[in-house]
Image 1: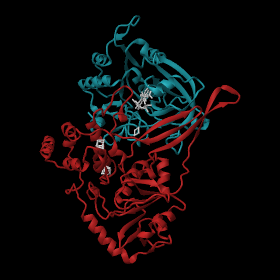
Image 2 (image 1 turned 120 degrees about the vertical axis):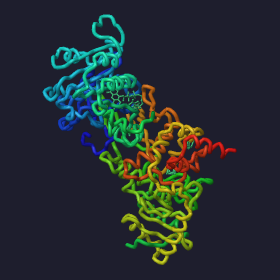
Image 3 (image 1 turned 90 degrees about the vertical axis):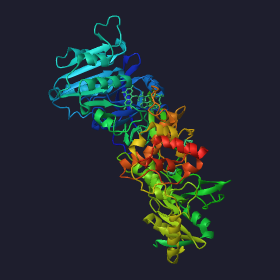
Image 4 (image 1 turned 60 degrees about the vertical axis):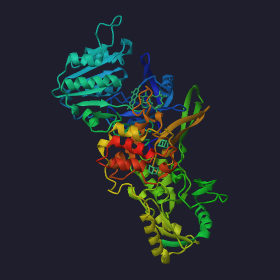
Length: 278
Length: 361
Ligand SMILES: Cc1cc2nc3c(=O)[nH]c(=O)nc-3n(C[C@H](O)[C@H](O)[C@H](O)COP(=O)(O)OP(=O)(O)OC[C@H]3O[C@@H](n4cnc5c(N)ncnc54)[C@H](O)[C@@H]3O)c2cc1C
Ligand code: SF4
Ligand code: SF4
Ligand code: FES
């Protein structure tokens, strides 16, 4: 945490930039009001924060900027309910609360020297972004990097400027898809899991990391199983309704594990060993 | 300081008022025919006749409390800009929990492991816990539903208490369990207790022998197969109303919600008890709910107490057998019966339904 003894006490932070990513997703770059705390703040790729709009409440979002770029912390927020709607009404210069970092992170050290396959859908690119940027900032440590990313329509794709950058890089293989034909769209169409099957990336020496809507994840996992990815090489981040973010309020458990504290990052192998509510 | 004492019954009020001299005392108070833990004031009637309807949990973990307060302030030289000021208060008075039972005191130890023994300790609970002295009344015997001995407790178990008192010879034999408890023993109305020790021991043994143990083969791991059986859970919880009474009356249930309340430029962030038996507890904004059906929620409640929590905390069970959820469930769901069944490796989930049918006829 930011050094607060009280894990419920947010750090006050100022929004320095608001980016309209898609019709219903905005990114917020924030800086702690306490410069000393900002300077000393550290986190790992995949960890999350609880953002406060005082008077409305708190919600969980992944820190999607990488720890290699610490001028600000970036969060991307899809408008969904009360807090996310309130966040969409925040302007540059406004003060919000941040409790971070919370949860575990991607095992990026174990991924060194391997091929990396990112599979994302919609806002699910947010947690992948932090790791992608981290890996690009440490490019020599990893072998081939492939990113399969899709959304419903082209305007729904997040981080459009970065997508363009990655597309132009020779050391990244970016495959973009949207669900259906769209005026002006010349790239692929089809659901992410289908594109994954068509691409059929090799499982050898490859770690797959996936995040997106539950239905996409379900079929992506099936696809990866068909491609013979071992369960320990498939990594995903989970979602659950959260409040405390520190393993106390009791609502985000999978058996004796708490997604907020022991997660949100799990390998498929770990998940299969936990009791599920299904 | 002595660690043994004796308190005549007629001095109870005097004792409680002495405890309250520099502390808030929470005691079981008679209200109509219910006994409820309340902040003690002299107009209240304390009752130690039977375990209270509510546990004393709220004395250390209030049903509602302010985590922080916020205030919006306009910046003087920039009317466009709003600053926020946050305030936290953990300046709690000293407290005494008087007249809880051993299962109630053990309830705090269940919450301690989660709220204190972690790198993100809850500062509110921790502070109140440190500030509180727990003076527990040992039970003369069980009431309907009690099964403390089946989950590692008992009518005279001292875990979680600072002082325990046993009813003997028109009064109470007191024993200090901790240093905090020893301080209590120096109060002037406490008499020498050594001569009552043997009698108290005998009374406690008698009480212990009278408590039923629904898990005579030991509180071991439950049958994973049965635990995973949707059939079983569907059957056992068909009648549940999802009212949450079981969780609100439980000395070990600690799940909570956090909400903001705002009035113009000031407001509070409030923590309040929640219940895993409620449908919205796990409902995500997208509409997805991992536990939409009540049998999934109940399975989680039982699983948490008898399976997940023991897995995480070295076999400790997150139920102290107080029996409240059995006594006060409007449709008589009995957790001890269900867990007893889950421990039987030969149990057949379908037989549960048949057994229940038989009982009806
Ligand atoms: C580990 C994790 C990372 C996430 N990262 C992002 C992200 O980067 N970008 C993004 O847009 N969304 C993310 N989410 C989802 C986001 O937290 C929810 O959409 C958001 O909490 C909804 O809040 P609300 O107040 O608008 O909705 P309401 O329906 O008004 O929700 C009420 C409250 O319930 C809780 N809640 C409800 N649904 C969820 C949920 N799915 N997850 C967590 N808490 C919930 C929150 O406290 C919320 O304030 C993430 C969720 C998790 C668990
Ligand atoms: S689960 Fe029931 S019997 Fe066990 S401690 Fe809670 S209320 Fe008492
Ligand atoms: S008290 Fe009984 S009816 Fe109410 S939620 Fe608990 S088990 Fe269900
Ligand atoms: S959000 Fe409170 S336990 Fe996970």
